[in-house]
Image (cartoon, rainbow, N blue to C red; front, side, top):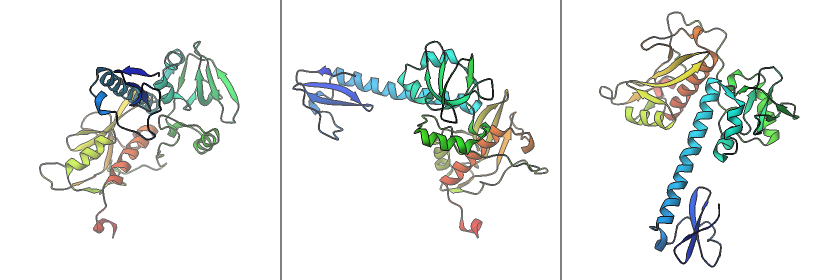
Length: 289
């Protein structure tokens, strides 16, 4: 954006999400400067521009969150919608370079552009470019993408930068044998200890997960149903410290699904959550002996 007057002696603009100032003389701001001259900090123009910068930040986060939801749920997205939002820099940053798929097996590639007509420009896995005209496309969860290692290598070769974590998202493939008998909890990432329940809950919230009572949860929509992955974290009022417990999945409150009934996306996202919670704590010495 251009420079705006802020009083008689300064002009202001946005640079990398923050407000910077320069003298009216046109001299460039000092390199690395992160502060505004004190005499203009309370001017209405500065305050309004700061509020605008905060709105842009929230807007970018909202765009990324929506695209992440499309990807985790593998929802079909109308190409007309992609064309409509593409001119918006925040939407474009969230969508560009994501791998999308169409109706046919060969309709796959890195999204590079969306024309007003809804026609998409893709870079195919072999490096060639192609145009795709279809009513809708899907942004698949990486656990559903065939040849994921090759796609990761191609992304590196293309210099692709994904604004939403797709190709380099940590994935867990459900083992072929998931018969736990009567045990429906996965204990692979259980036992990480935190100094308090509140510290564990704060870490979970910072990761984007929801804390519900004595569980950290993540809701995943897959194949037309909503599955909730849950990691037990204990009771803040009866336990001095907190430990991560077993991971379970359920499609109804108070129920636990058999591992064999858990879909590949719900399995991967549940394991991703459990691993992240485990990584934030410590494993007591007696558990590693």
